[in-house]
Image (tube, rainbow, N blue to C red; front, side, top):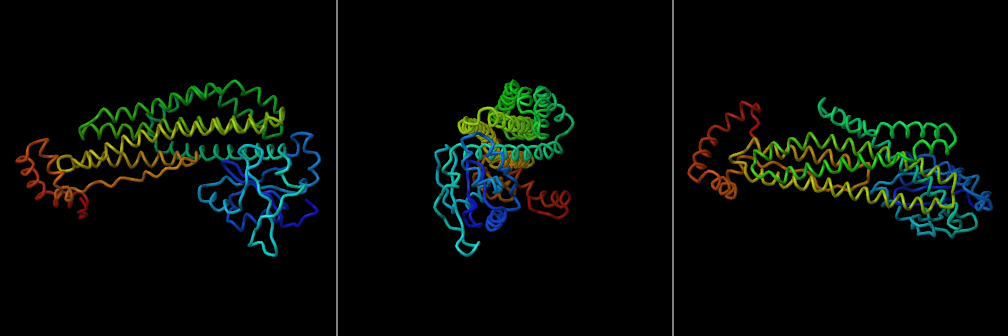
Length: 403
């Protein structure tokens, strides 16, 4: 784009992120102006120029440019939407060519020209392929960090349980690790791909096992009705859910790295197919996220229902009720933490335990307790506990009477 202003840049967006392409200074100034420079990484735009002879005629227009990529969050996606990216002939990829008129603070749309990526579907597909690789690698790195955090919370028994399941993926994990090392050091991609192309079935098998196990935990909550039983079941779920989320996180991390290699292989061997292949991977990713969102959502809903039952039975079951609510909040937190790298929206929030003194003034709580043990017995229990409770709280919590 040597015949254009140095402030001119091109934006390429897909389902996960944004690529900014242009003169290095303009790219950095633009990203800085929208607060995303520190979150960006090098796109290695030169790779997109190598995907086939069809793009040779535009190479001179873009060869002097650089590119940076940002994996978008929901908040940053809102900031980018103002620049009016429009769909292209490459499915799932949007494009805009923008520049400034006198001030870097005011980016405005300009017409596309000969150097525009939007006029070359093959080059645009190549850029889309690179963007997906970076998105997958970013997600894999986030999942690695999540695994370390989960590991810190697991006791020895649960860690051993997790490791037994993960061992089923050892062969695939080692093959992917070796192939990624070959790619990183510029080795032959055909050799790298040959090490992993038969391993995806193992990952799917372990993923299916983990999802079935999470569904079983939800069913376990469904079968319990009494508060004491719910407290025991919720405690089991709280401890077990971390095991299976750790297994899923490892599955998804390996699947992301597998996808990086798969896209690299297609870019190398069949560059004209990269657009369709990228969309197929996006659809598979969408289905995977939908499946995990439904499974974890079902589990959290069952635990929330248990928490509601417990909160309505505080008068006779205060410790057990508190335990159910605490288990729900802990489980919801780890599930939300697991959702974050996958881009799954989570707005379920936490549950507040009902205080005993509030329950004492709630006719519904009195009625529920009366159904369980009889109204006269409830009145007697309430009278005794009401007298004793301040002393119990004083002894246990050192004067904190928020019971």
